[in-house]
Image 1 (cartoon, rainbow, N blue to C red):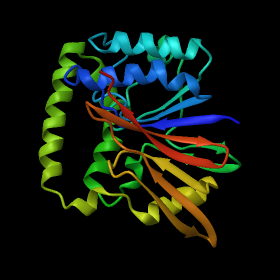
Image 2 (image 1 turned 45 degrees about the vertical axis):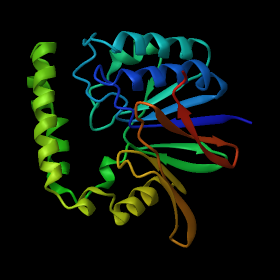
Image 3 (image 1 turned 180 degrees about the vertical axis):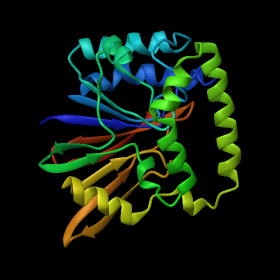
Length: 244
């Protein structure tokens, strides 16, 4: 019986070496036991382009390549922090990039995979910014700068975004249930798995008279992370803990 693992919101960065170490240990010890690993966005805290080779990127690439070469496929989705992950990273790691909306069959259940930010439709400012940051006009200009300049631009944007977020009502940044139902219905999904909100949990509800489910993945921290395991029809969460 095949097992698939799901993680998201690791926010790997040079500033969080313990989280990087936790993930590398996970790749070495737990991930090879599974038949597939899915990383549903915000894998990196910032990704300014595939030509960035600053730490911890080379070590992460090497470890991912070791896992995929061993026979465990790794699938990635873009998050709001790392939507510039591209063909260069995929070629170097052996990972496969999935579209923002991706449906996979898990234990006979059509399952929609998303990062989750597209579900936060009450936050109109964010959705407008999201569309602009992915536009050709922005990307052409951004990628014309050096890596160092891009890192500085991204840091400034994160600071401004954080300040704006602190002024918003909490509810506006959470998922909109109507949007959840819309995407699931359009994609023919009976289960949705996503991250982004940092509010892990399992939500059961009815969609057009059918029992369906939304599973929210946990973010990772320096000393602990979490994964979702789906094996056949069984679902469980596991802690990923730092090793001394």
